[in-house]
Length: 185
Image (tube, rainbow, N blue to C red; front, side, top):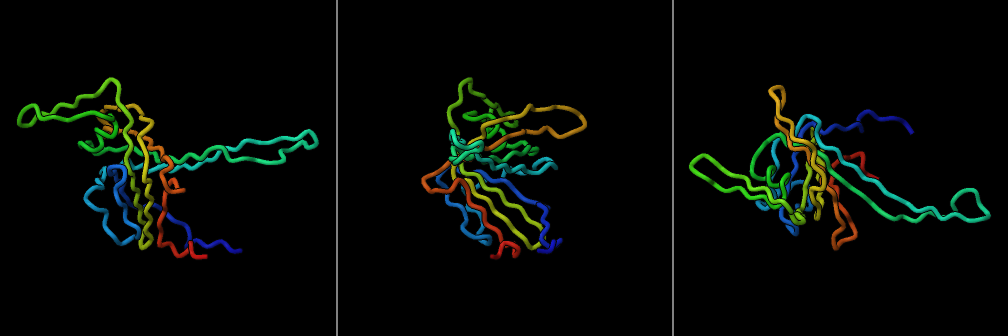
């Protein structure tokens, strides 16, 4: 089996989208995201971190020094990113159940609730490397972790968020589409 540098990919550009839970996502790479899907805008140059992990429970036996069986006990998938485009969709994603209201002509007010409820959405991630296009859809997810908002003169104000994927009615936690020829069986 030879190494092939043509199969090395980078995410040169892309976008993160959010829609109400239950929104229909594209089932191919050519269909545009419909109006329910809102782009979150510019992200920090760190891009997006996608993690996928599993936990297992070992079953040990008296007669064996190593486990005789392992049972899958959990699956966790997250997307981590820092939104640097401050707009209504990113601010209300960071502060769940918050509302933005116009106070006067150019002044808006953000009311941040003391006890926000669950805020589940559908999330989409799209990234491109030349002619290679990828889409990841999380039909049911929630912003479950937030980093500190740093305010300083040398960098953009960023809203650091982690989205956790939840299982939906389908057996999948997410769907990943790609036109990468290296994926061919």
